[in-house]
Length: 368
Image (cartoon, rainbow, N blue to C red; front, top):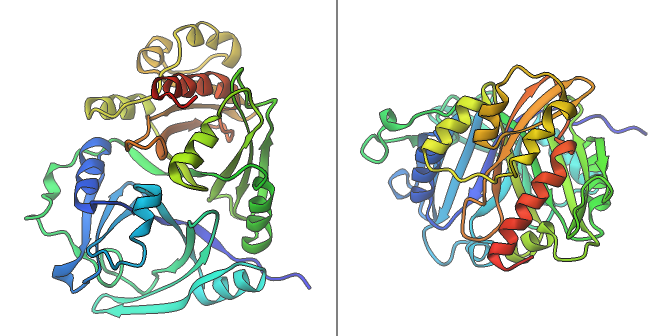
């Protein structure tokens, strides 16, 4: 019998578990241009953790910190440092989504739950994904508050709404997970079987390799194509790959990077650079070969070279992308900024230049 599909609408929000949520909110507001819109904590009668909701375009991040050493997730900080703990998926029916996922082999963390306050009702349920990352099914159709019960609109005394400067970030394009060697196909099968995703594209170590490291990657997407999750695993290379470095410092499988979409990558990158965001750089020779490789584009090549923006083309158009350096001291989570001009690809033509740029950073860290 064919089980019914789980209709996933989109990524509702990404939950980060961090050492100091207030300071993290300050960082994402001032570096990436997010608006701090909601708060949860002692003043809202939440006694075990503090949380901040930040938004830009259609992107919602939730930053959570423990308030006491007895918090059930406090050990995450020792193991992982700051990182993504949950990728929440908006669905039509939380109970149906959870029951189907568990019936298909998903491991439940929290069953269907309804929270209620004066702004309405908020439904959610959670299952396990790779490492100790989770997916929470969310439905907020009957909720009109700032985020969910327990959160209030931000008090200007805590964060003044008038002081953030948006960088033109519009949506989450995709979220990349790193898993242990030999585990990629297992997690691709999890997304296919449990959540009804389909495999979109596959890259092997012939596509993604340098003289020193290699990786395998498969991309899965939801049935409606709005949720895309590339899954990486290390492949045998001469030295320690970036995936192995991540798994070592993160303490296991987890979210490697989040790709944020913009309609004007030049303006966005200029804004982020002005805010002191650090990006990976490729050699100038990359741009000498670019016209022959990608053909005509509307952007000024000299400006792209000055900013370090990469370009790739597929049968449907071209795309522009750039990657930040890790946003904490551990070489783990980073961000991608992406603009699509028709292309649906993930920058295969840039892999070698990008990986060599990452390896130069690894060499500086002494972890290559």
